[in-house]
Length: 193
Ligand SMILES: N[C@@H](CCC(=O)N[C@@H](CS)C(=O)NCC(=O)O)C(=O)O
Ligand SMILES: [Zn+2]
Ligand SMILES: [Zn+2]
Image 1 (tube, rainbow, N blue to C red):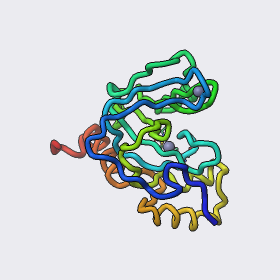
Image 2 (tube, protein in one colour):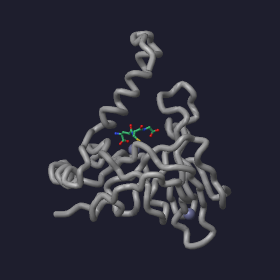
Image 3 (tube, helix red, strand yellow):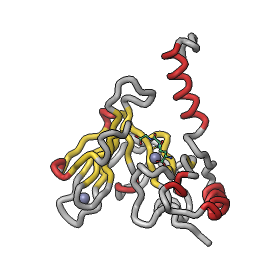
Image 4 (cartoon, rainbow, N blue to C red):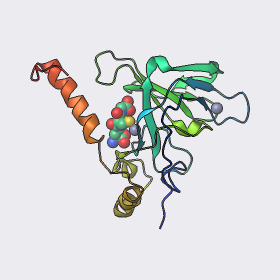
C-alpha cells in the first residue's frame, strides 16, 4: 500500500535550487486569495505528522519549514486570516474560507525558536524551495486519527525510501538547538556559540 504522505513528496523529493530568492504563498480559495510574500528560501524544511500543522486534504503529513519573521509579509486579503489556536505556541494564521495555514508565528520572546515563522511551501506555485530533509512527529499521525498503529512500519519505510529520516519529535540538530537554548537559560551550559 502506498500512503498519501503529501503531494509535494509522493512522487519523490525535488531538490531545491541554490540561490532561490523566495516567492509568494497563496491560499486555496478560487479567488480573493490570501497572499504571503516570502523573501529568501525556507530552512529546516521537513514533513511533520503532528496534529497541529496544516496538511492538504487527505495527506498524512504537513510540509513545513521556517523563515525569519521579517522575511514574510501578508500582501493580499489579510482580512481573511484568523489564528487557529490562540493557546498554541505557534500562532497559526489560516484562511477562514479555505482553511490553508498561511504562516505560523511564535510571539513568546522566551522561546528557542522566537524570531522564526513557520510556512508551507506547498502553497507556492514556484520550485526552488529547499527540499524537505526529514520527517518529524511521525507517530502523531496515529494521534490525529490518520493512520492505524499497524501502518506505522510501512509509513516510516515510505518516508525513509524518499531519503527522509524519521523521528517522533524533531531531528537531532533541532532537538540539540532547543536543548542548548534551555541549558544556556538554566546556566548549565556556559560556552558561547
Ligand atoms: N503529539 C502532538 C505533538 C504536537 C507538537 O509538539 N508539535 C510540534 C511540531 S509543529 C510543536 O512544536 N508544536 C508547537 C505548537 O504547535 O504550537 C500532536 O501531534 O499534536
Ligand atoms: Zn483561502
Ligand atoms: Zn507540526
